[in-house]
Length: 467
Image (cartoon, rainbow, N blue to C red; front, side, top):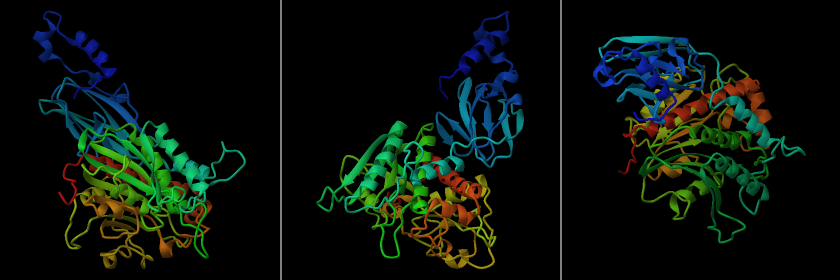
């Protein structure tokens, strides 16, 4: 793999010293013997390197034809893209790449195989690191956005974000979110569609951030709705912490993490408006012909949706039972068959990488659930499978043939603050038994979604179902 790196200079110096003095480099290049420096992590001999969970690690492997293999809880990246099976063979004299450990990595074994079939195993016990997407950073941003005070450097007070009638609070929040994505270097736009024929009462106002891919013929994305339920008699909210400031902040953290990766298809990271009024924001983006809308001449491959998360596994109810964790892929045309390839990724991420307890059940059943498989899933904590469940922005893209994943925590009977003034960050903390527990549960689902995106991006079998 071609890549410029500070390792190249190190390798050339090593080459000069290891070459036989009696001949020229060209005559002896096949007789180079590898030293302890031929595999390095973070510019250190692998034997002495330290790995940290949740963090990036640079690596260098010398020797054409040698291979590297990593376990499931370590992601292997070359040229900025994940290698889904965690295995790569060097096509040049030097391979440079990166390793990303999940926050749940413990004992890690990395295998290097030489051209003659011999190999070495490097065993590590991962130290606690600072995850590139973390529950603690999520909490800090949630606290800033939902808190109101006189010092704007200490709290943003971006509340009352309901669409309709002109609402300065929504416009102010949208501008703040736009600045976050733009500040990270994304091509970011405020997409305003005025189907109501009144510019002061837009049908939708979305924040759309674009990351260009290496393949200009396809498009894919992730998103969350930033609007909250409008006030009304017994309904309506102010912070909308769970629905859906939680998903909004997750998208802000994903944008920060994705700066360091390359993508196959043009990718949109979106914050939708008017979800609570009928998916109007995402529909306007997907079905209108405008400068910032979904390109109509590209294949829409997949979309991942974040809505109402954090009050979910591994957090527990006051009863001691875990809260439900929902992750549904689609379209689910035939409930008796797997219809889309993204379901394989959904299962692989939860079962193999995150090692979630897929068979964990409660004594009873949850208050609400999926459409087609509820009878066999109503007592399962990890409700992870294909399903037709709607009620959020993924439906917009599923209707256009995209393969989709929808993440959702407790709702309806399991979250009585849904669409009410009590949907606050403080209430989320109280429901799960503390800030640390909330940070842990949101970190789990954020890593699930991020891993799904990275792997789906590099899985050619994931295509629009209408192709």
